[in-house]
Length: 121
Image 1 (cartoon, one colour):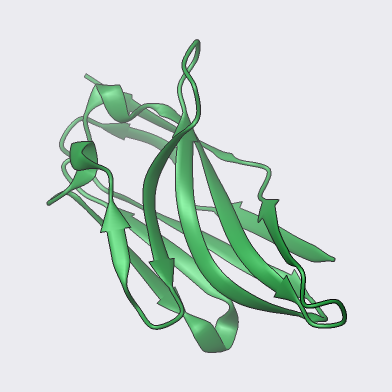
Image 2 (tube, helix red, strand yellow; image 1 turned 180 degrees about the vertical axis):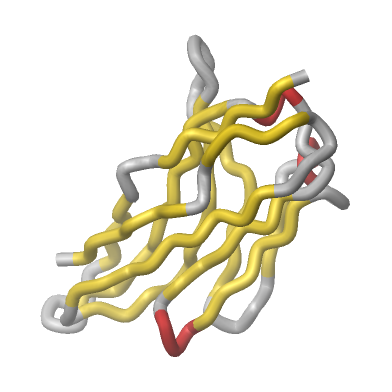
């Protein structure tokens, strides 16, 4: 079982910064990718950024140049540095992990519980 715990959300003024963290715990798995998604009220969940174990990353167009995803493989932790925040970035941010289950070699996905990010104008 993989357990993801996010932290770092909160309230910030437009133009400000926040850093989200997500730590994966458990045993019997290897993480392939980790990423961040967000869901605003009344909207579908959308990809923000994701990163592979080798460090390759991709970003949604609406955060390019403002957000940076990074990963500490030794700690099974992924970070999202969010700069130049805008009111439209307000959402619940969810961490995700794509893993290979060691015992079965099956691929599965896990989600964190989400952390609220609110950007005031």
